[in-house]
Amino acid sequence: MVYNGYKNGYWWWEKPAGTWVLMKEKKLGYAYDYTKKWHWITSGASIPGDWDYMAWVEGENWQDVWNHLYELKSENVEVQAQVPIKSWWNQSWKDKWWY
Image (cartoon, rainbow, N blue to C red; front, side, top):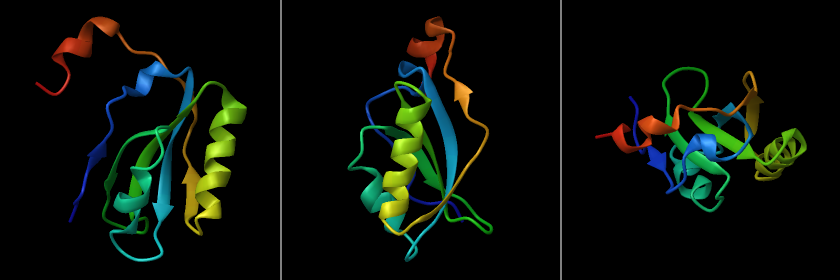
Protein backbone atom coordinates (compact mmCIF):
# COMPACT_ATOMS: atom_id res chain seq x y z
CA MET A 1 0.00 0.00 0.00
CA VAL A 2 1.38 3.39 -0.97
CA TYR A 3 1.35 6.07 1.73
CA ASN A 4 2.93 9.40 2.63
CA GLY A 5 3.69 10.84 -0.78
CA TYR A 6 5.88 13.92 -0.69
CA LYS A 7 6.55 16.93 -2.90
CA ASN A 8 8.43 20.04 -1.91
CA GLY A 9 7.83 23.38 -3.63
CA TYR A 10 10.31 22.69 -6.46
CA TRP A 11 9.86 21.02 -9.84
CA TRP A 12 12.03 18.11 -10.91
CA TRP A 13 13.15 19.85 -14.09
CA GLU A 14 14.57 22.89 -12.28
CA LYS A 15 18.01 21.27 -11.91
CA PRO A 16 19.97 19.97 -14.91
CA ALA A 17 20.65 16.45 -13.56
CA GLY A 18 18.77 13.90 -11.51
CA THR A 19 17.81 10.30 -10.93
CA TRP A 20 15.02 8.25 -9.42
CA VAL A 21 16.31 6.49 -6.31
CA LEU A 22 14.92 3.38 -4.65
CA MET A 23 15.40 3.20 -0.87
CA LYS A 24 15.15 0.58 1.85
CA GLU A 25 14.31 2.15 5.17
CA LYS A 26 15.57 1.46 8.69
CA LYS A 27 11.95 1.26 9.76
CA LEU A 28 8.76 1.59 7.74
CA GLY A 29 7.67 5.20 7.30
CA TYR A 30 11.11 6.60 8.15
CA ALA A 31 11.86 7.94 4.65
CA TYR A 32 8.91 10.31 4.74
CA ASP A 33 10.31 11.98 7.86
CA TYR A 34 13.89 12.54 6.69
CA THR A 35 13.42 13.22 2.95
CA LYS A 36 11.68 16.51 3.77
CA LYS A 37 14.87 17.98 5.23
CA TRP A 38 16.69 18.05 1.86
CA HIS A 39 15.68 20.51 -0.86
CA TRP A 40 17.32 18.26 -3.49
CA ILE A 41 14.65 15.57 -3.06
CA THR A 42 11.77 17.12 -4.96
CA SER A 43 9.26 14.30 -4.60
CA GLY A 44 8.85 10.79 -3.31
CA ALA A 45 6.40 8.12 -2.26
CA SER A 46 6.36 4.76 -0.58
CA ILE A 47 6.14 1.84 -2.98
CA PRO A 48 5.13 -1.79 -2.54
CA GLY A 49 7.67 -4.55 -3.11
CA ASP A 50 11.32 -5.10 -2.27
CA TRP A 51 12.02 -1.37 -1.89
CA ASP A 52 10.19 0.90 0.54
CA TYR A 53 10.42 4.33 -1.04
CA MET A 54 11.17 6.02 -4.36
CA ALA A 55 12.34 9.64 -4.67
CA TRP A 56 13.67 12.07 -7.28
CA VAL A 57 17.18 13.31 -6.33
CA GLU A 58 18.37 16.32 -8.31
CA GLY A 59 21.54 18.36 -8.64
CA GLU A 60 23.39 21.05 -10.56
CA ASN A 61 25.56 18.34 -12.19
CA TRP A 62 26.23 14.59 -11.93
CA GLN A 63 28.77 14.98 -9.13
CA ASP A 64 26.18 16.90 -7.15
CA VAL A 65 23.67 14.05 -7.63
CA TRP A 66 26.22 11.41 -6.56
CA ASN A 67 27.11 13.48 -3.47
CA HIS A 68 23.43 13.51 -2.51
CA LEU A 69 23.29 9.73 -2.90
CA TYR A 70 26.27 9.39 -0.56
CA GLU A 71 24.51 11.66 1.89
CA LEU A 72 21.48 9.36 1.81
CA LYS A 73 23.75 6.37 2.42
CA SER A 74 25.21 8.17 5.44
CA GLU A 75 21.69 8.05 6.92
CA ASN A 76 22.11 4.26 6.92
CA VAL A 77 19.59 3.87 4.10
CA GLU A 78 20.18 1.38 1.32
CA VAL A 79 19.82 3.18 -2.03
CA GLN A 80 19.76 2.16 -5.67
CA ALA A 81 19.91 4.90 -8.30
CA GLN A 82 17.96 4.23 -11.45
CA VAL A 83 18.89 5.57 -14.89
CA PRO A 84 20.10 9.15 -14.34
CA ILE A 85 18.80 11.65 -16.87
CA LYS A 86 19.33 15.21 -17.91
CA SER A 87 16.26 17.03 -16.65
CA TRP A 88 13.99 18.61 -19.22
CA TRP A 89 10.32 19.36 -19.38
CA ASN A 90 8.01 21.27 -21.66
CA GLN A 91 7.71 24.37 -19.46
CA SER A 92 4.25 25.23 -20.82
CA TRP A 93 2.92 22.26 -18.81
CA LYS A 94 4.01 23.74 -15.48
CA ASP A 95 0.67 25.54 -15.00
CA LYS A 96 -1.31 22.40 -15.86
CA TRP A 97 0.58 19.93 -13.66
CA TRP A 98 -1.49 18.36 -10.84
CA TYR A 99 -4.61 20.41 -11.49
